[in-house]
Image (tube, rainbow, N blue to C red; front, side, top):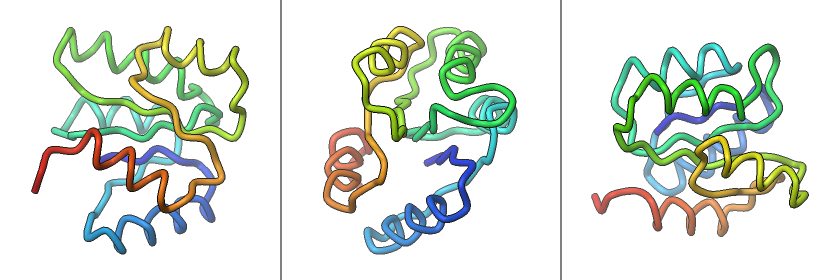
Length: 119
């Protein structure tokens, strides 16, 4: 799994939650790193912060989708802005789901259970 999050505290919280679930993630801190990492390795899911320095998560998602040329990859939005406009923009960019911040353990577990292949 790839987690794209620029805030160090949010990365620590997500990492702690994932460890509690027995999962490990690769982390990227900006949109450019997200594109490079997501297109350079195999991931089951990407959790993408929408507001990132440089290339934002919505544009990064568009570029990842273009680079993958139809190859399936689940990308879920991570954002503190849960407005209808942002949700629509995320889905239009090619994101598959939406998780609002602050991330809660139960919601993260539910999303991962839905999208990750069974271990």
